[in-house]
Length: 153
Image (cartoon, rainbow, N blue to C red; front, side, top):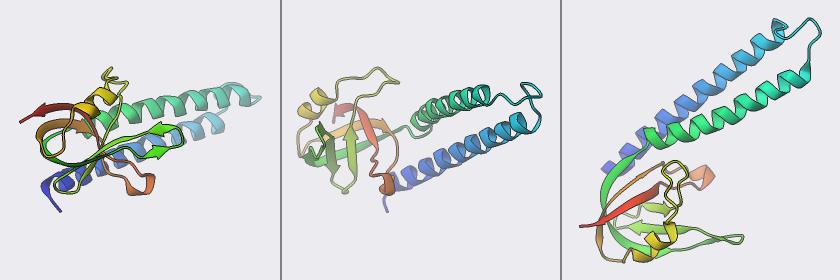
């Protein structure tokens, strides 16, 4: 296991613990709302459902933001291969480095970076790049670290 994989595993663990903590907080909040009749003596389940829906959406956004900022990395890689597997009608831009780590090049809403196709085309096999990105390899979800900046070395 190389240094990059060690960092990715540590970052993935941090994000996982934070997400579990968020889920536990929401379960506790839901329990308090239900058990204390927060809204009225007559339980208004539509209000409870709406609040829980908002909390779930907020936790998704918070999880995305935390995942981005807690798993940011910068490393130097040499491009071994490029590939574009198809998922339905969508192409995924992936590159493989000389250590057989797979990275995705993807648009990013948080940084307003919507140039993934041009980035993918400009990367050349055999060249070395200083890259920065975020994310971790999650095998069960087929997720790979995402790259968002490239600088040829």
